[in-house]
Length: 272
Image (cartoon, rainbow, N blue to C red; front, top):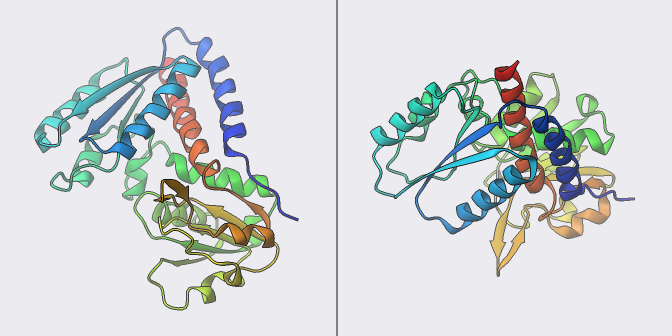
């Protein structure tokens, strides 16, 4: 019954296509990444992006700052990158130290270079949608379900996933219900949903008795438990699903590919 979404396989297919497109450019696309602090998990994300950049022939320009960096210093760097004609994409690796104002930093990024879609996340003008939301939409489309005629439960109201995804689906008149891990009687939201999308970072939040047979399960939550990555959706839910995205190996790998798809699109526009 169940059909698993292989995010790694699809990521590699997308990156192979991007490599062909990049090879035709007169100049290599440039992704500028701002990383603040020493978070270990962040280092792994940076490394995965750097490997993908190398694979497709993109220049990866990393600007590493200590935790004590000032707001003014980071904003100055963003403005420099905005004005640098060789830079096609700018992103701030999240999370950042709490003393910095993330919203103000995001506002400084040129919407035409905001390949991580952070301005869209905050409700501002942006040329690109966040890679994780594009990945979720791609997974839903590959499930074969007509999401515009489906009941959709979004669990998670976060800045990076839940909120921007809800806006994207609402713009297409999808029937959505939004909750989070604190919502009382969460099963009343999920039990009759045709599509359940969870992005809370709460391991095994969604249990088998909370979903119906034939459900499409999209897991965009990741938590480390005992040295292993776990998703929001208990793996025992998979046997009831018609389609599901695993953790690890589902939405995560796709997100990196979609970031570079945005970057290549930016470069194509700028080099046209």
